[in-house]
Length: 447
Image (tube, rainbow, N blue to C red; front, side, top):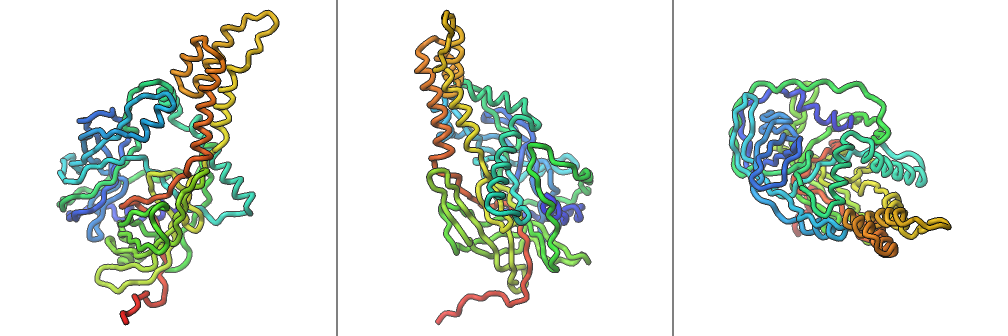
């Protein structure tokens, strides 16, 4: 996180907004900070995830309010199918959102036009760690520890009460839906937006002193700013969507610098709007048996306005994506470690309970038997499975329902295709860029 904080320094130094024009096609990342009902016509209010610059000037600060509305609900077929197999018959939807107003510092609303946003999802920040220590065994141990922390966070991290409620809802055959807090969308302006000059945004509070990470939090090593002279930490938006499934090695990619970078003497080093030119260096699609995809890319040139292209060396050090991915020290993107044993093992133990019919020598275990059958049914079909188990039917039927749930968990963790790695268009990335002294690479002349 220290690296991300260092990368955001330009936005805190230039803390005064000026009048300017936001060009058409500018991406705006908007996130909501509260839950909203899942219904058409619902008004929503979000905040900009990143500051917005134009012509190297800050126009809209990070956190600027953006207003919008849910204009339609789209059926989420894949989620519906998976939920039905677990005894949940809720007709899941995804909201189609349209953002139409920017709330300025003085409280006035600046209208703007964008396309509709459909694929909202939480934004997960991946940060490249320091170079890994130890051999293969140490790295596997660290991966397992990371997965265990993720499972532990679900039980003891802040917000556990709401997560428990949503888990209970998920066991019901039908339950209300909502647009989750933290859902984010990326939209592009359809027309140019004239932003007036505004008062300087309020200063953000200083970060508290470094504290010891809690048990469920990742232990992130201290990532120092690059020590090599002339290196920059560049915030950029990908212009091309890339994926481990469809991209191939050598595929050309571009990214647009989102925030200007200034030298110590306040002269401009990298202009906002400059283009990073690079290619995919490795792409490996996800495969069966939980084998996840692998994707890496780098940039070799930076093209600034009214200047010759400059050769650079880059390393991906951060990315904000809709999927939980992990970056290694070389900037290669892989899936985040996931626990594959705990959930199937727990469900299998629950499923075996109806078969434990040790009632003693004098009988009298009917109530206990029904309770065990209810536990077994819950493992497979939630509340519907509990009802079947408590109805007093065959314990073998209740156990079968439970083992169905365990089998589903095993399939999705061990047999199904692993997680693909993808970066959508306009994904915010953080790149450590080091200019090279050699001449820019030029294309081969035509014979």
